[in-house]
Length: 84
Length: 154
Image: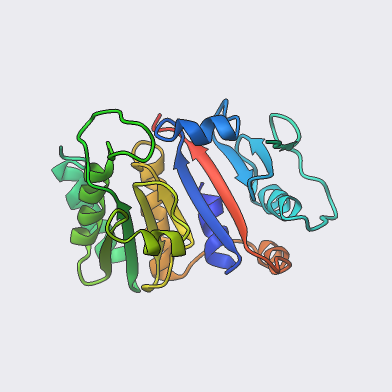
């Protein structure tokens, strides 16, 4: 969550929201949170686990629909699309 | 409830004395509390009072640098709507009174508390600490991007 906050500080386009998963079960259910940290970008794509800075930034760009040169690799698997 | 014990408050004050450089504005969006009762979404707020105490302790740790505004979303729903706040408690961290883009939704205890302190310090110092490569990549964003990170206290 610190990386997300730092991105919000570095870019005026980024808004970082740290959500206490137990306190908002409707959001945890909506975004299919099974483990933490669980990161959701633009309420569309998601990944589980902590990523290094470079991969995290790439995941944010990818989630925002901006092509990235190198695909990131999440430690627990590729990012997933959220439907519904 | 003392969210933050006295020794930690003193440690926080000592740390903020040396680390903070510029102003930090906290905005806490709350709803009148209902103690520990678990109520349906949108009714009452089980952790708003604790969140208010935590926000006030942050301010009291560095009153010359940290300002706090408390917004009751039941009295000012237009403000909450304009700031894009859907749930309470939500605390935003910004360098001025503009809408903060660093937010903590829910009571930031456990692993979230260090992230909150880190956010206050980084905002105060305007120090994101990212690599030039990351900053250049983020500059490609032409539209707002929301990064939600779900965490738990333990």
